[in-house]
Length: 299
Image 1 (tube, one colour):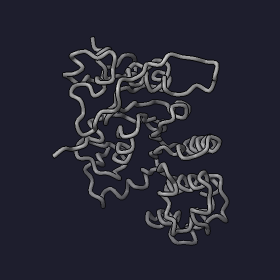
Image 2: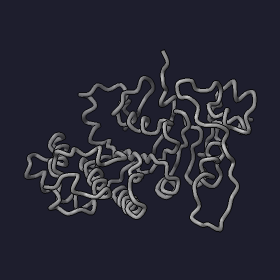
Image 3: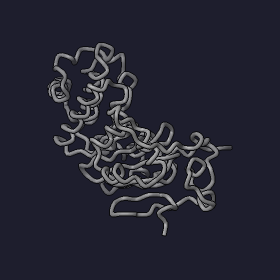
Image 4: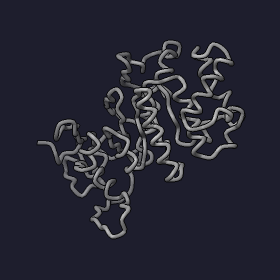
């Protein structure tokens, strides 16, 4: 029987009040990592330390107090919002379940303020998701996430389904809410420009593993891993007169069930050696806070 290791031994530390960007192509394990961190998925192994507690081992009843501290905003708000519930009912559920509001009347007062906080109106409480635009629905999803005042929010490509102008509004909203809540973000995205704008540190994933990690300027200004370089070179520049060289990758993404031996990236890498085909490189720190898993930087 073959197994898919969607996330394979990644280790990352997210500091309080910072935004950690998680980047990689589709299927690399970004969303699975985000869901596992907040225990929407149960890890098969490893630890998830949150406020000094390993929540990976907690049973559901012991996990309940942590649910208000960890929230997620999904990519597609039309799929994550219940089409049969009004916005008021949807937002009142977590408030009543966690005892933040004692009754519906108290919940209604909180919801009115929540909607104003995310750029909507209090009278929207009686409407259904299909009566809103995509950007408005994402604002509702964000309102639901921040309703319990969490200290950690996983943002799973929250702007990828939106128009560019609306993306900017949502990003500015997220930055404003982060300051108000003093929250920590894990920002999952394909959009490198958005990641660079909003993130403090960034991690690059490939086939379930982190291949590079560092402060956002370190990774974007001085990419070390060949895969990171290829990702950044593939991103379009908003200037038709500006040209740059691109290092085209060899072949396509390997089969996730039968991953290559050694470094998973070696079949597509022009710098590969025999060692790359035999062993997986360990993370090494090239400069303070800037780490990479590549034999090019092993001494």
